[in-house]
Every structure is written in structure tokens, then in C-alpha cells.
Image (cartoon, rainbow, N blue to C red; front, side, top):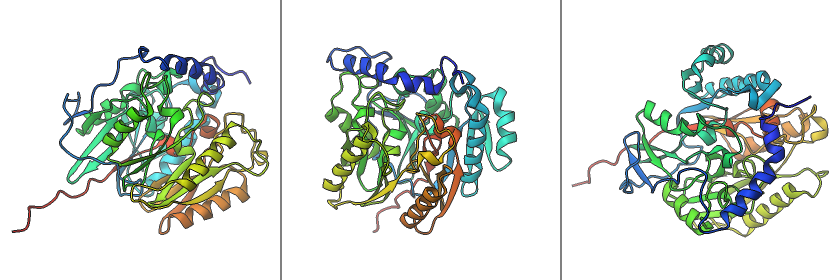
Length: 398
């Protein structure tokens, strides 16, 4: 089947060339970014960031923290998805309906497409008119942080994963959404995506160097500089870095498809199947596994590492070379875990059992998302939680 010129999969196939050029640009300390540099960290009630750092000590809670709602986005562009767009929209509707069983869902859609979104998603999902380009709310939307009695959204200056895909509307989603809900906005001094970080809620963050220390997002920035920004933005004390893989997928190997905290001190990691070739993805998983085995978290704890093997691609109907065959891209909701179901029944059942054991007290809900996975993403990529802010501290005791 012929793919349209700007399809997501076509972008993935040419990503290595683009990333290599960007990395070459980023090696020079005087390299010029392709877009305006992000401003220093600052906040406002909503809208433009202030120049001075916020006095409020915000931190990103673990995904298991109670959510007020989940944000999602309706894929808008046929030139990105081609003939797969109807199937992708059906997948998004299934994910939205599954999440809505546990918590409110707000789905952003272009005004001319919101009617179709409402029809497919049903009455359990709130659809709002907001200009978007694609479905990846984890990356385009704000990443929320909290403090006692306070909520803010971090705007990570989305640039289409290093200008790999059209993003004229998606680059404004974080700002527009925060304005709409009158939530304080924090503009990050670095460029990245929500899928590029994973936190335990107790001071530890995981990330891949390939998606952050990369000239297509942060030209001229060192890992130490980026780490300092991430620590301030998300209220963490320690960053565990994996090498990742640059230039082989559109995200440059987001951590949310590689390693996830299931609770403080426990990490589940994606592992290739026994018949998987020893390629760059297998080596990236091996490297991450070794890092985790040697690492301690911000509390000084050695990590318990649980391996979760990918599905058998030979059991899937025409997955394609860019298929994101990982169970790690699940989403934790209030009382549940929404996980991908690929069609390899034995592997799907095994993954559901493992995730259920790692998230006791939560109902595991498998959802078929093969059209989304064919575009290199998953359930976590297409959702973004708004956590409930903790109660404000009371007056000091007399």
C-alpha cells in the first residue's frame, strides 16, 4: 500500500537521517536552534510565563496518584495517517471509553471533527473544541505538577519530536489547554515531551539521553544542564539515565516504552522476545536493564526490576516495521490499568497477569490498539493525567 508523503510511518523511516543531522548541529556550542529558545523557568496563573522562578515547590506525582481527569486528543490529519486514520480513530475512541470507566475524560478535537469524535466516543467522554494535529496528548499537552493546594502544568515546548512532524497546532496545545482551565503554566527552559520522563513520586525520574540530549530538541545543552532543568521542573532529586536510541523512531526512544515505575523502588522494563534479533532495540533494553540493576533511587533504595517480554510479532496480523510492540505503554487510572492488547493471546494474558500483580487493587483492562501501535505509539502516549492537588497546609499549631 502506498503511504502518503507525510505519513507518520514515512517519518519514522527517515528519522535516522533527520536525527543525525540534528545531532551534528547540536554538537556545536554555538549551534542555532530551529525555533525560539525556551524561556527560563517561570509561572503565571495562566498564559505567558514570568521571568522569575516560582516560589512554590512543585513536584510531579506518580501516575498512581488520584486523577481529576484525563486529557486525550483526536487525530486530525489524513496526511499523517493516510488510510489508517479511521482505524486509529476507532482505537482512540476505545481507549477513551476504557479510561472513562474510571475517571473523567476530556478529548480535544478540531471543531469540524468534534461531532465525529462525540459519535465514536459516546456520552461518557467529554469532547471540547481545540485545534490539534495528532493524538499524542502525552507529548503535546502539559505535564502536570502539584504542591499543597496548588496545580500547574509544565509546557515542554513541543516541537514535533525535533521537527519530524507537522505541529503548528500541537505546539500550542499545552498553553491553550492551561488557559482554558485557568491552570498555572510553567514554561520549561528545555524542549522535550511528557513521554520522555517517568517519575516515582518520591524524588526519582527516569529518562533516555537519546530523547533529551539531542540537537533536534536541545542544541548545545549538556546532559548536566538538562538534568538540572528536569530536577527543578518536576521536583526530583535524582535522574536515572538510559542511553536510548536516537534516530530510529519518531520519539528518539521515549522512556515510557522502555521502563516504568510501578511503585517507588519497583521498575518494570520492556524486554525483547526470545526470538528477537540482537538489534539496536534489544541492546537498548539490555543497557537499561544493567543501569537499573546497578542503580539506587533518590531514597537510596536498590531497585527491584521486573522484566516484561514483548508479544510474539509472528502472532500478530501484519504489524509493520514501526509497530510499537511493548506492554510498557500502559496507563494507570483511578482504580485501574489500561493496557494494550495486541492479539498474541498467550503474551497478552501473561502481561495482564504481571501488570495486575504489580498494581494490586487495580482492575487491568486490555484494549486493542494495533492501529495506534502501527504508528509507533500506544495508550500512554495518547493520554495525559491531571493529578489532584494535595490539600493546602493548614495554619501552624499553636
